[in-house]
Amino acid sequence: MSVKISTWIMFVSLFLRLHPIATASSGRCLDDQKSLLLSLRNGLGFDSKLSSKLLSWNRSMECCIWAGVYCDEAGHVTGLFLNNDHISGKVYLDVFGKFKYLQDLDLADNNVTVIPNTKESSFSSLANLTRLLLASCKMNEIPDLRNLPTLRTLDLSGNLLKGEIPIWIWNLGNGSLGSLKLSQNKFSSLQKPFTFPLTLNVLDLSSNKLKGDIPVPPAEIYVLNYSNNEFGSSIPVDFGNALAYAYSFSISNSKVVGVIPKSINNAEFLRVLDLSSNALTGPIPVDGSMQYLESLDLSLNKLSGRIPEQLTSIMTLEFLNVSYNRLSGKIPQGGVLRFPTFTNLSFEGNKGLCGPPLSKTCGTSNKRI
Image (tube, rainbow, N blue to C red; front, side):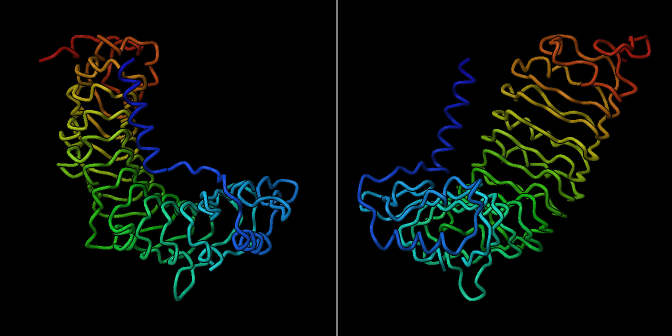
């Protein structure tokens, strides 16, 4: 129970750090802010039958109580949460540049097309912006955000971005970026030489076309997702050292080769580890150090040798999948591996494995030498 509570506390602390909660203003809406909002509304299209935010923007009401709008006590707009509101049209990123006090901007999951200004991003004047969420906004170019000193969270996932991930992106917020999501794009590499900010807690580069060396994250990483890429390389020997405080790491379906480094055991606070659907070889190096591990997926690789007895000492393990490898020997029967959660599906596809929950019994050929 104490492990679950501490995990929850860590998650809430990280969430509040990366996603500050805006509060509605008790002050009166300023006339210029209302005019800017109405101008923004008039420049966008939305489905009046489905929209729950823009539809409620009415000149006769205080703009600080409009749906999706948050203000400070002086009546300045500090937050615009317009995500998933069936909005359409083109956004040139100077409409937002006039909201000088804006801290949070969320346009994700609409039918808008964000078009970065070729000369200067309309976001560049937003000196107070801390969170910018532009997921699924049909962007084919990263807007220039280099002049945003307070930016901590950036989400550009689900767009049409390709080529190199520019090195300047790691210096956003004066090198204090906490969360970066670039998943579901078509990035092929990271521009070098890059240096991850030490403050980076969440990094999602999944579902791209990244090739080459697997980047070692900074020591403060908490959530790391490299899955669904095309690396074609091995996991660096010291990679596990960088996961000392990590909650989850996934690099599934990314054409990873070579062995799982023994340093993975240094990720002792890891809850989720997914290395499935790659071409990993050699033994499973888990020595039982990851005592908080809840989910382990090593399926669809080329791993060989025995399933480590130490896995049975991880009492938090709720999901295990080592199917379709080249493992052999008797499945350990002690501890958690007796739980009904682990059926034959967790072990199938390994011709050399035997013992419950598989129907194959262990003969003399399976005894230790």
